[in-house]
Image (cartoon, rainbow, N blue to C red):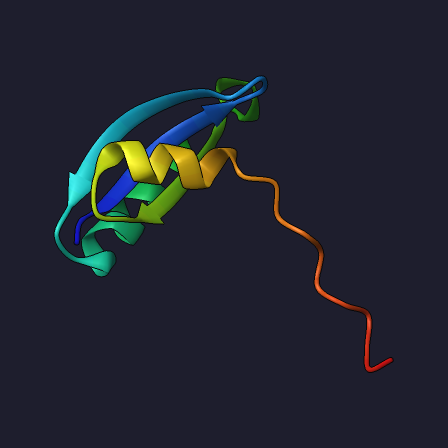
Length: 71
């Protein structure tokens, strides 16, 4: 499965920036983009998924916060 690098802006504006076969390459690319881009241009995210559509769907999902502790 490939690793996708996206720029994510408010209101689910998602732009695919790159695609890599290995995490190390995707991570290095994402870190370089984060270093040179302004925060107003969107957040840089790396997603691991079967295809681009699934990766975009995962980015749009709202995640529940982790529980604070044992209850």
